Picture 1: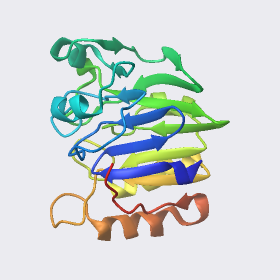
Picture 2: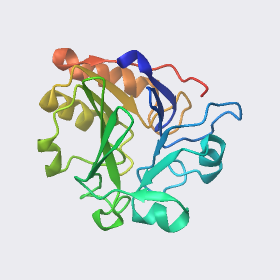
Picture 3: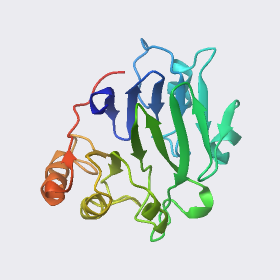
Picture 4: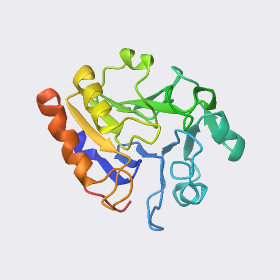
Length: 208
């Protein structure tokens, strides 16, 4: 399953199912397969790009997001925290994502993470979040965690959460190779701190 998860840059990922699932598509190539499912966590521009959603949108594409996303884009299926839906072979459960210690992602904005259950694996995409009590209920096989500390988990917090959750694999997100925000040096630090609590998968950015 881990080989089917592709990093497209920053917080954007592709899960090559079936179904074909895009999470927060951003800066997508024009030549792509239509998505079966597009998951949007919140309405910040680098996670909610209507232009990229349009590139991926086919006649049967299902878009899922929160109420703020639905207010800006027609046809969005709204999921509230702990509610779920099934698309083909995948079960999608929305979970809370917010920053109790920052104004960047307040709880009242209704940001989401997702638990994607596919091929007998539970994939936790945390979204833009700090450590929150609701995470105690989440025990994934694969965790995708932000490490940029911009109202989200810092490198140290993401490592501590990994040690607590103990997924089989963990993938850092919200970073780039450029010298802004979290960088590849932070990714290496994250891997060092995680130790043997999980296998840290350092993705290579790919074109969708």
